[in-house]
Amino acid sequence: MSETSEGFEYFPYEGLRPHQREFIELVLEAVKNGENAIIEAPTGFGKTVSVLAGILPYAREMGYKVLYLARTHRQMDRVIEELKAINRKNPVSGVELRSRKDLCLHTYLTQFTSDAYTAMVVCKNLKKLGKCEFYENEKKKKTEFDELVKFFLGEPSHPAKMLSYAETLELCPYDLTRRVAERADVIVASYLYLLSPTIRENFISSLDVDYSDLIVVFDEAHNLPDQAISALSDRISIHTVNRAIKEADEYNEHEIANFLSIFARGLEILYDERLKDRDVQETPIQPELVFAHVIDILNLDTRGLVRILNDMVAVGDAIREDRIEKGKPPRSYIGRIGEFLLFWLSLIGREDYLFLMSRDRGLSLELVALDPSKALSFIRNVQSAVFMSGTLTPMEAFRDVMGIENARMKKFPRMVRRENAQVLVARDVSTRGDERSLAVYRRMVDYIVEAAKLIPKNVGVFSASYEVLQGLLSANLQVRLEETGKAIFIEKQGVSSAENDAMIASFKAHSKG
Image (cartoon, rainbow, N blue to C red; front, side, top):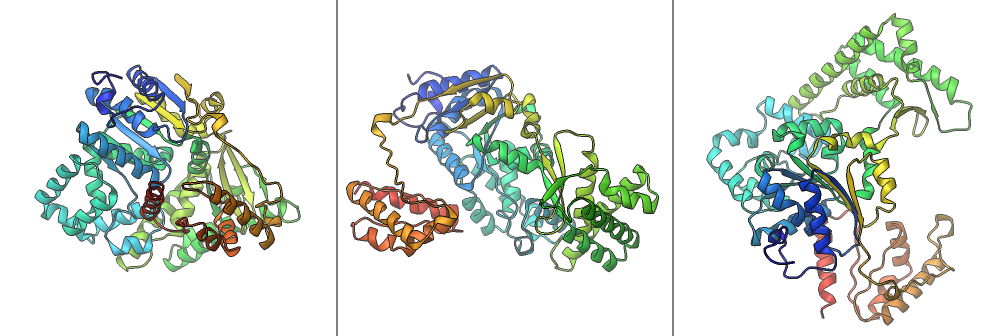
C-alpha cells in the first residue's frame, strides 16, 4: 500500500501484515457506501488498528463520530493504545468511557453503589442536592475544566490518567470524560452503552448526535448474542418484594404496602399451582396471571394498575433521595419492583420474550429475551456498523441471529499455517468436576513441564477456571516450572486490567532474552 492511498494515513506502523490492506479497504468501502461489515480475522491479525485505519479517513472527512465497543476494560484500553500510535502520525482524538463508579471521586457513590443504574441515580441526586463538590467546582473552575478538555482532545489517554488530572484539580472525572466525548473523533466504550435501550437513549442524547451521525464497531462480536440477551432480560425475587413491603411500611406508604402484600400473596398462590409439587426449577406462565390476584382483590383496571406502579417508581426516587441526604445506601426496593412490573406489563403480547416463574434461590419472576437482534435494531439508522472477531463462523448464522442487513462478509485466513500448528491431546486427564483429583492434576503438571522443557521460548498455560489453576498449583506446578529455568507469571483472580497488562508485558519481554 502506498503512502498516498486512503487508509494508510491513519495506519501508524511501517509495514502491513498479510491481508491487512484488504481488511482496511473492505472497511473503508463499507463505511463510504453506508453498508455493514461482518469480518472474521485471527488473533494477531491487527484487527483494531486495521478497522480504525479503514474508518477514520471517511469519518473525519464527513464528520462522523466513531463508537468503538468492546466487552472488557483490557480490550478498551487496547483501542486507546492504537489511537495514541495513530495520533503520533496523524492527529486524532479519542476517549475511553467508564462507568460513574470507575470515574467518580465522591466517596458516597464509590462506597454505596454497585451497578450503573444506581450510580446514575445517585450522581443525579448528589448534583441536585448540591452535595458533589467536584461538580460544583466545574462552575468555579470553568477555565481549568475547559483547558483539561482541550488537553485530552489532543492526546488520547487512558481513564486512569484523566482521573488523576481531574483529582488534582478537584473536578469530576466522569463529566470531564463526557465533555471530551462530545467532541472526540472516537469514543471507546462497553457494549452496554448501545445494547441496553435505556442506557443507549441517555447516552446518545448526552452526545447531542443522531444515529445517522455514527459509525459503530463491535469488537469480539461473537459475544454479542449473549450480551444482548442479558441486556434485554431482567429478574426479581420474592425477597425483593418482601423488602419493598417493609420499606413501604417504614415510609408510611400504606397503599403501596397493601398492594405489594396482596401481590406477594398472588405470587405464592401461583407458585403453589405451577411449581410447588413439580420436579422442575422454572416454568413459563401467562404474564397476566401475576396480576390476577391483586386486580381481583383491589378491583383494579389496567389504568389503576399502571397508576400504582408509576407511583411506586416516583416513591422509589424520593426514597433514594432521602437516603442520600441521610448518608445511607441509595436503594429503593419499592422503586425496583415498580420499574420491573411496568416493564413486565409493557411486554405482554410480545412473542420475543419468555415470562418465567422460577424457584432458583427462592421464588422469582424472570423476563428472558429470546431475540438478541432487538438490541441492535438501532443499526438500521447508523451510517455503518462493523462486527469483527476471531470466531464468527458461520457468519451467515451470526448475521441472521443478530438481524444485520446490507452486510459485507469476509473471513481472513489464519496467520499460522496448519502444518506449523501441532495439536497434542492427553486422553488420561480431564478438568470435568467429577474427575478432578490431586493425581489428575499431577499428571497435567507432568505434561506441562515436559512441554516447557522442549519449547525454547515462552510457554502459555491456560486453565478452564481459577479453580483448575489452583489445583495445578497445589500439584507443585510453580515449583516444577521454576526448575526449568523459566520465569513464572501467574494471573491472580480479581486483579485490575492494568496489573494484568503489566504482567503480560513482562511475560513478553522475557521472550526477547
